[in-house]
Length: 197
Ligand code: GRF
Image (cartoon, rainbow, N blue to C red; front, side):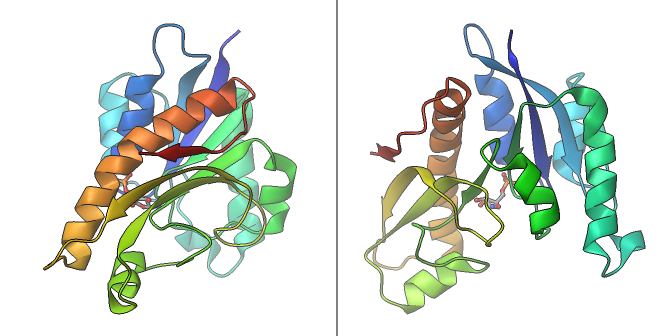
């Protein structure tokens, strides 16, 4: 039976689209639900228009109470019988209370060559540091932010005149190749890291 995948996002969801597009044919997984903390996330409208179940869990009514937000996430995901969670631009920090029960079944994509540049503004920080090469990483999610075993990385050379935006665009194109590749392997039970190109 196919693995059931929940994809969590906060924005346009270009990675989500790449993941959804990949889960066809003999792929061992299928998208079961796309969930966002923002009702206006472009990814929600895109998924709904394609007949994929969607859920919105607004974090704002919960204020600083992350546990209450995460309890609602759990409650909304429950009916879908999820096997794997893919974080794809989900801009909320998840605490151990949520992460621990999902550990080994939840993966994330981050726009840097981890362990370098955890957190935000990765491309600006990499340029500032004079990096010759940047990239993206898919990793298992653990309770520490942008940590966890690496499942795949794709590298992108820094070119003369690059800006954070130009780098972000080239890295994003790699994310769209790397994330589907890693999800497929992960769904097959293969956690050996894959390195692109
Ligand atoms: C990507 O750069 C991803 O690596 C980061 O957030 C961004 C999401 O972009 N975690 P999109 O919504 O998938 O287009």
